[in-house]
Image (cartoon, rainbow, N blue to C red; front, top):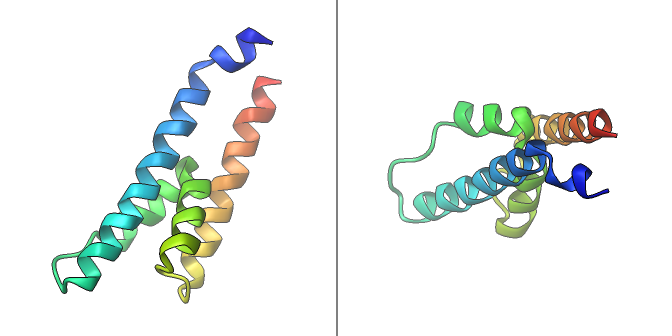
Length: 90
């Protein structure tokens, strides 16, 4: 069991989900101040490669990008990617 949680994939998942969460928060803050924004393609890409859970949590918490279905879809794909990585560990 210790080997399961010591695997580097857990570090990757924590890192990428945290990054997307803070990226969404930062973009929301920039939007409120009418300043330069994070490109949507960056957030979508990071969501797909495993940051779906962090992106979905930030989307709900900060009420950011909630009307754009492509974000929800990409974040769900990212969650499925996370699940596939965890399944691979098992």
